[in-house]
Image (cartoon, rainbow, N blue to C red; front, side, top):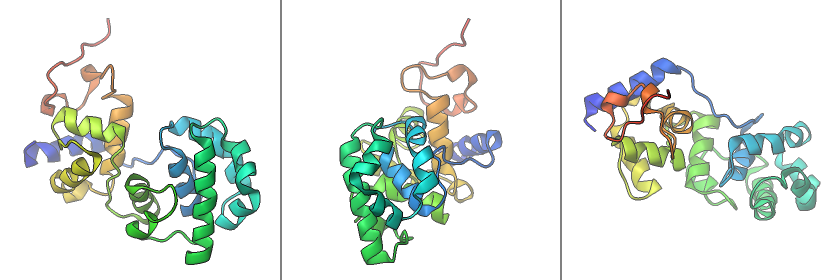
Length: 213
């Protein structure tokens, strides 16, 4: 996609939603980190249902350690892969306490060393909690970027690097939120709602879906 078209692409998404936010519930950087880690292969809605009660009582790694793995499982057992995720959350909490004084480090490389934390999770935390201009490529962003021609790539990392090149500086702070929400509610996987897409004329996807009768 040409630079002028990429600028217009984001301008229109920004016009529709000037201040996009994550749909995951959290109260501080630590609970955000936990929520994003739990969201792997799960929906934000499902994670929010599981963490709503959890985050009323647990907001620090120390409190999570005190809750314990079995206690955490009782809160998140409706989430896929909850056994592994519970183990990772306890382990990352222990690392935060032992190595970072119980604080979430504002460093992507450090975050990626924590159990259960990959590049996508680290990018979300850096962006949402610390205001960094990172782009977390999930399945929605991967699909939207390739389908529209905004930033094509065969892997999430390739798409991330391409987006860093093509996203105008003005829009980098919120770019991944706009793309996630666009993919979640408009540019859907099976039935993209092209008929109401604000960037339809800029999109490389040729099989434009018709408006419902």
